[in-house]
Length: 468
Image (cartoon, rainbow, N blue to C red; front, side):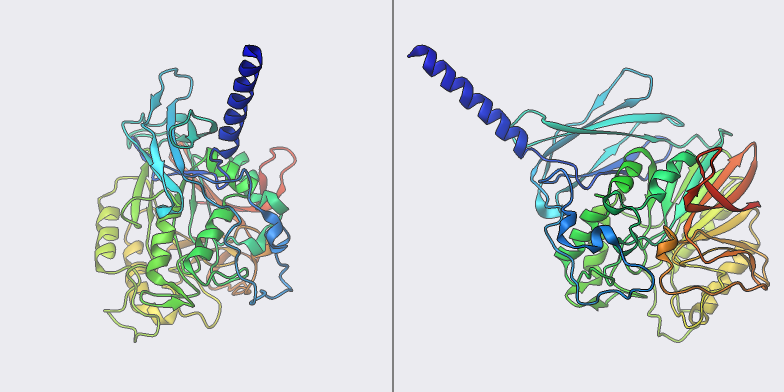
């Protein structure tokens, strides 16, 4: 009898442990590391009920939409693609090849931020590769699941180390090109060995199939976008900076105060900041060693309505941000200065657009910025938003603007400007990414294919190179 009781107790214990393991949180929406400088970083995580997204809910999740098929406007985003789960998480991190580990306290994660949490890491070493492990558990249980990754910190401002970074824009569920793996460019960009990555916005589209007409659907699309395996693996292992634009704020060409069905502009702002590692300011600057400094502008939060009459009071940046941008650029001693902006300053844009500094409706502020950049040494514009790759030279000020292009060729929706000889040094109607390399005090920009690989290097095929 005693033996029987022991066997029953053991069986119950094993069942309990198995249940705890099965009910513990997963990381189906991945991990993202951002806002990294010389000594700090933010690490974002979301706890999920299941190990993977439920890609079976809509065919578009893995099939995408070809360019000859219009968006299915009647399709709305399911809200249970990657359900979240309450629990606790902590991060354990250390410099690569060093054994001393730092362990954070356990953080309790609820539904109030869509089951997300940001760990703030401080007192980091500059120019170092950090390895981290995030552990998750249900309340009052032992750590039961973990996920591992890495990121790089920025070199100090006097460090002449080589810097390599990549930039892309405009990605969508409708442009997935490798089924549940997501966007293959994320796999291929790793071969470039970037120090960091910048996404200039339109990370997803609320107003494109499957549509997000309320807060719950918008959150669900974020949950899915980083559940694709290529996307997830990339952000686990690369320092990233995230910017937003119109489609991942609310809808096409939006401004404050507008709505999209039941989704409001203010809800869009909150959802964005919940789903990427980001501090209070959405415009910021980061120094990467002696030679590189980047500026990330905010083009939605402070803008005037697009239909306002143009003049000195009409703005995209707002007075505070514009003053900050000018003063920080003028005070920087970095050899190369890159203004990374969601929309073009030079263009030229395709006909009929009325949303950015390259358009006539924002000509006054656009020309103010072009004149300012002209007077700054080694200062270049990198822009997103446009669904084609290009290098433009403004005929009046001679400043260079590099359009990184969308995530892949499939995202050529909406057409392009076509090559305009007056502006373009390089033009391609295709997608991919822009890679910047600064080595021994010299910089070059390269436009890459998303898919085609160089058989010798396994790095994506270079379409065009420009020495800066």
